[in-house]
Length: 164
Image (cartoon, rainbow, N blue to C red; front, side):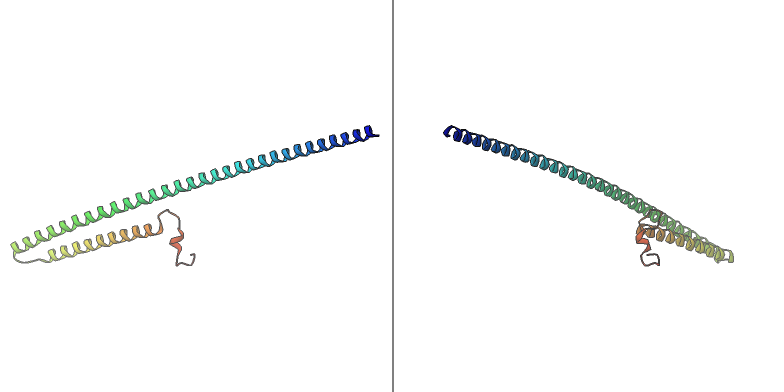
């Protein structure tokens, strides 16, 4: 009987040890699975962050390009304005010079004639037309700048209209 009891006890012990070993194995496997899942999640997060960074970089580049284009357009507009102002100044100087010559001629002749008055009217009309053209050009350019250029209709350009 004692031998049987001892045998049973030994068998029970062995069974318990086997159970413990199995439980330990299962725990280790679970731990390994959890670690693998965590690593996968970390990798996914890193990939997502990299994608977001790339998208942000692309957006930054696009913004930089747009700003550069706008700066170039502004510079071009400023150059055009300067050129126009120079042209105006030159024309004004030419007109003043012509006026001086006319006065000298009148003084030399003693009296003005109808032809000279007619000539004077024509010159004034021409000057007015030139100035109007210049003003229109300037207004158009300013309007284009305000609307943001690009041939299509911009949102800013529609403000205050029925379509806006």
